[in-house]
Image (cartoon, rainbow, N blue to C red; front, side, top):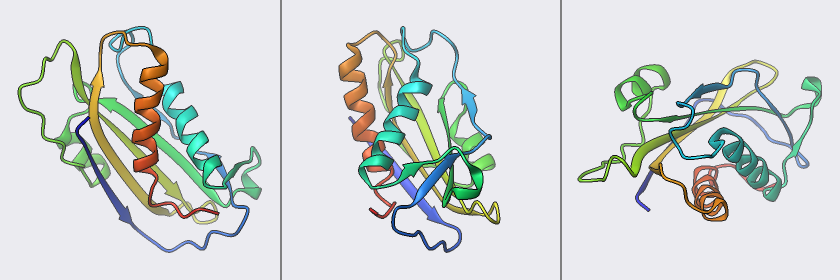
Length: 161
């Protein structure tokens, strides 16, 4: 599976041992219902991110005052959020080049993950990845496995706790 990633560090944040995170209220969903056959990609991505954060030693907290990190992500297919708009809105583009692909079966997808300092609201890290999303129905276990590999690579910049 061809992929591309880019990570930008915007400011410094000391992350303590036993670090906690909270999901930001700023989620945006950029996908058409039904475009990826019978799959709630948003939920699969969120679950995979939570699993990878847990694997790295981060723990979720529902209480904002106890969070060491504030995180969010956006996920979109190229038909709803193209590279030019991604560059304009988010300031970075992974740059996956897609040539001669069956557009009925595959579409370039982008996942952008942000880490913010919960005390200042300042962006600390932004990482983005692009890969080809399979639009047709495939076994859920296969789709989850593809997402998990992608998310693991996307979040490789976060230190283990």
